[in-house]
Length: 244
Image 1 (cartoon, helix red, strand yellow):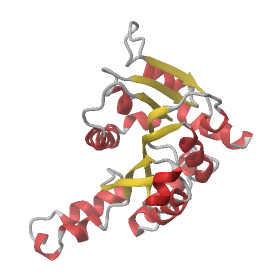
Image 2 (cartoon, rainbow, N blue to C red):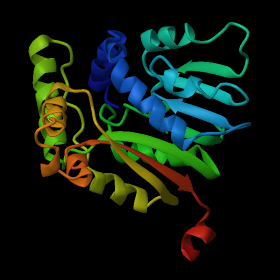
Image 3 (tube, rainbow, N blue to C red):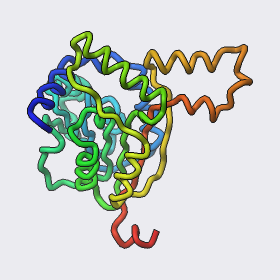
Image 4 (cartoon, rainbow, N blue to C red):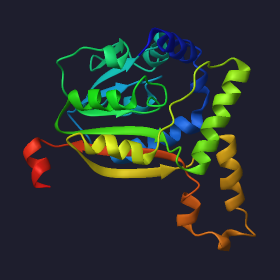
């Protein structure tokens, strides 16, 4: 990540504004919980962990490494970790610059891809630290969806006008992610769409839920307004990939 973007991302996340979005975080926690239910004795890497809530729900019987570029975010995460919990480590680092020989069973990357220098480099790096048979869970806003495009541009403009963030978020689409992942030794296990609590998305979702018009929209049509995506991939070895 260029120094100027690193500084901008650090400045944004050090404000810890994102932690005010409890509904968004809780939605993501529940989806990840369903995808990873019942896991034990796994090594988990949480890239861009924030306050750690998403991965710390798995701290019992698992080893966690919480990594974030922001020291302020890690301070928030540390408050959610008991002093005697030796199975949780916290590291401040830019993931793309982070060097490790460790391999992980599970890599969680939630709320990160919009901010990185390169989405492709980030996904390639995630693959490099995964064990064969390991799982990664990534989140992104599908900007090919009209609501996603509208949300992303609205929040970019609002953040700049308020002086909250002086860089634009990456514009990502489901097609882009699937193209990158098709070049990796990954197999898609699940792709979940969910509603964001953002103002624009809520205008549409609340309209669709009005009691006098539910018959006009099928559930499939309603989900078409959902631009938030959490995808789950499994890393396979080259032999398995060729045979699939």
